[in-house]
View 1: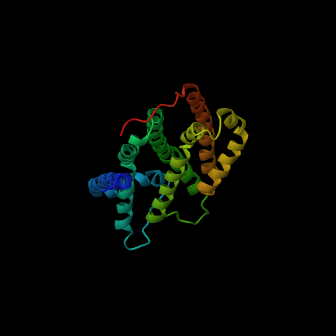
View 2: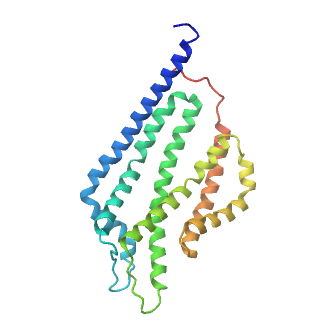
View 3: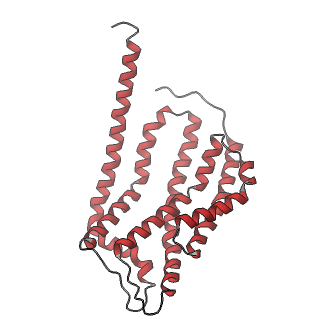
Length: 255
């Protein structure tokens, strides 16, 4: 083997080793989700009962939920158990991702990435909790009270699950707004001053996003738009803190 061929072989071996490590990390993440799913399966019906509480508490007298498909009583709680397992495994999945990419980062990038990962997980969970404890009861109270006379409110369990999961995803992602702003400032795309000057456009954009992501009622749209406006201000504060404490670039670590 000549000296000219060795760099290509080393590069190929390095690429293969990265693929092997990536596969290992992905398998660990999938295994974590499956283990949590197996642990949650015996409690699937109870989990659905907890999820349905914001609606059941506000149903009219004699109102109940129904299953319009034959397999819905079995598949719907199973689907919920899978998504609960996926949400619960998010920290471990992100840790596997972090363990894969961390060796190629600068030290100052690592110091920035860890708070971003932690805060993104916390904000996502806060968004879901906000939707469950505040938004869903308010929305269902509004919806059940405006039903026309003579109309029995009996939501389907499958449609209810899809509605709630969509709302959780919308609020969870929108609560990531401060993290997105900090990343944009860290990349040099915008500055904290530009974010502050664009505040009025951000307020309008928050209501537009809320109108797209939430059900077609003013209450849920407002309950998403207002937190987004507050989170935008939090993102500006975080971006200013980042610019004041940004360290000088450092060389990459060996390996």
